[in-house]
Length: 279
Image 1 (cartoon, one colour):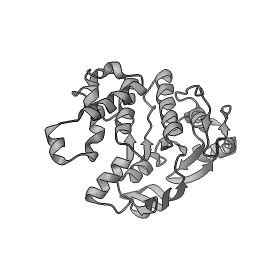
Image 2: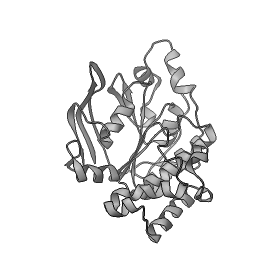
Image 3: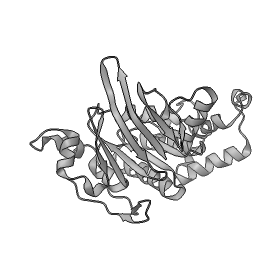
Image 4: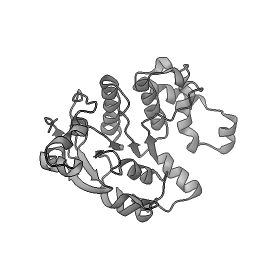
């Protein structure tokens, strides 16, 4: 279980995340929604420890990760894989090498400096690319791929970390609807088949409802909604996005939206969660 207890993050006089307390069971598919600047990305980056909380604590399976340092922190960042909106690949390296970089925190410093990967690691990397239907690009430079292809390479790299949790920070924000669907289908498949917890920031309500069994809404750095898709009523959306005349829904609905996944997303109870109509 991931436990976030009274976490706050300040940047100077600005409070980006305010007194957030959450418990997320292993194996959940969680969508975090809210306006730009609501604190979604800051929350994920604190969980991964790319930035530190100003106050509060973050624990995973009883171990406080908000205080880890050195090798213990590197192990946590291996177990808690991060996928970014802008992919964070090395453009001049080929796709296969980019995927193999997901093994760095599993290996000795000497092997990493020598850039030596075993045959087993290379086979595993190819298998990850095949799973994401992108193995044919293995020898291409990552910088030559489309945005959707690069995001799939980033997911393959995350799989190479053998993570217990995947954090996806706006993974489809810069993608067209078709590639966005491929990426979300891939994350949902990993969640369902491996039981890996997936927490993803999303802009569109339809996407969150279609893929996530739990939705967390943030506004002005605070959690203002936490529940299943069925509880995300018009009134709840208004609290998340603000306003009183319906115009607050524009950011949530008019952004790129994607269709329902080809298979039902499963809750931890095993019950299928149906896709709901737009607000």
